[in-house]
Image 1 (cartoon, rainbow, N blue to C red):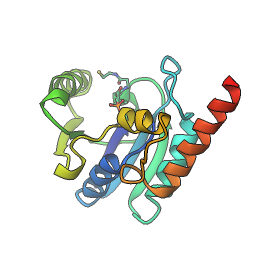
Image 2 (image 1 turned 90 degrees about the horizontal axis):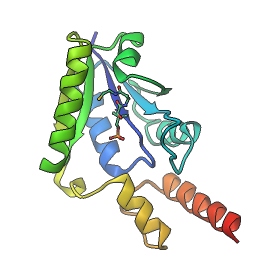
Image 3 (image 1 turned 90 degrees about the vertical axis):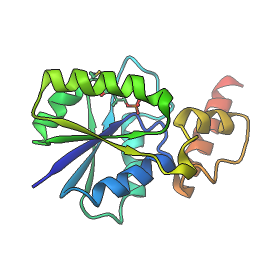
Image 4 (image 1 turned 120 degrees about the vertical axis):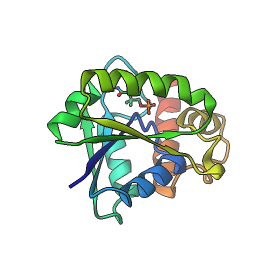
Amino acid sequence: MIRAIYPGSFDPVTYGHLDIMKRAAALVDELIVGVLNNNAKTPLFSAEERVRMLKDAMKDIENVKVLPFEGLLIDFAKQMDACMVIRGLRAITDFENELKMAQTNHKLSPKVETVFLTTSLEHAYLSSTVVKEVACFGGDISQFVPKSVEKMIQEKMMEKESVHQ
Ligand code: PNS
């Protein structure tokens, strides 16, 4: 039984993440999407909101679970009895940080392997940061995120606007 973790901030989830998730789910018995709940970061969406958007986006894939986690990824992997961490690699710019993370995690727990999937070409430029920036200036994000996520982003932007008025 191969159980893998696909961890991330997913603030918000994009078509790039969903592509990696679907391809990873086809390779393993169970894929746990781990949503980082980090108080030090100030995400646009709470961990609960991000879990909700991911559950909705992945509802048709049977072997995928979405759970929040805090603290070290490797502790979460051990807690879930997972032997693999999946990460997506977009470009060479991702590589340095991903290599550092994978090697640190391997030092902390040699039993957990990090496996990289290369992002599909059509999503190579995409990031949550870019989606937030385009949305913030009223741009069209429909080609970057699913409809349900687009709606959540628009609602969040309106909420923020009403707070600043
Ligand atoms: O989507 P992101 O922000 O690139 O995901 C980064 C994530 C959540 C995978 C990473 O920050 C993480 O694993 N955080 C948990 C803390 C941890 O385990 N740090 C040690 C590894 S360097």
